[in-house]
Image (cartoon, rainbow, N blue to C red):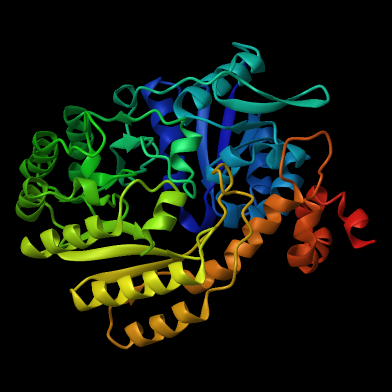
Length: 455
């Protein structure tokens, strides 16, 4: 009888990335018998070799964002040459073929719960690989993508007692909006699902009993929880959620990271509930640009004035507004920059904190191939001025460099073609990065076409 050892590569202690996998396996009763789950923060091969020596079939699992993929591509390729590797995470879902080129056995490219349950069944001999939903794999000389299966969030726990993983509780998956710079609506094909209040509260009991009283939620739009119509908050459901957490001895956080909101959902009714029941005193709202023209261009579906109104409502309820702004959105003109700087100054004067970002071309989003630009000098001057007032936060400077790394990674291998075919027009920006990457394990495998670009 086969015995399966799953090794989760927890980067810098980050087990939360595997909560979906662990929770789904625990719910199916798969953990602890023929299937064992291990975590390591180091090179997984010594542990994998030891488990293989004890008779286990070994699978090493990675969850990778684009920055982590840049860091771990070499390790992934080396591990995949010795053991089966399963990869998931936002970069894997958005550019699955890059993982497969490194020898990864299967890439989770959709909801992780049905995928991991199906993969374990396959690895134990129960079904063929092409019958596992939500994965990409190599079939002969091509990349294949299995059928998509949506997970019912109420059917799976958001945490795992067996693995002692208690992440922020995912209460909403998918988004009904179509912002072009965002991965969420495109990776989940626009399907919005919620975890019901009663199911969330059952999980909260476990969190509180384990000593975790601060209950944070994950949602693309925090105040859209259980909303039946885009732009219309479900105030009763939000109150049921927050009051239930309080009743169980928890401290709920909703409307701040990682459950920020949009201006349409910031209403007197919602804020009355949040101010009374939520533990957070900050509410985060996305503006992204001070230009209505640019907001339309990136399909943001709200205007600048609606954010000003949301800020005033948040302040009215004694809460601190935090407004997200993205520098360098594709299509941005000098006039758009001037309008955004003007909005930044107004928001700061009105008592808002500004969380600043640089545009990053995220794999899987419609703007994945959009070339980033250096931060505009007007943004730099405005930010320096506002920093002195203590109203600015965010990783915009680190993201400026990271944006070019991610763009060049996409440009090096932009599509699931038979061989990597770098985008020639990207060479002027990416040449030096590509030269450096070509000497590195993993990344070098994605750059077989680089010689043609250097001629």
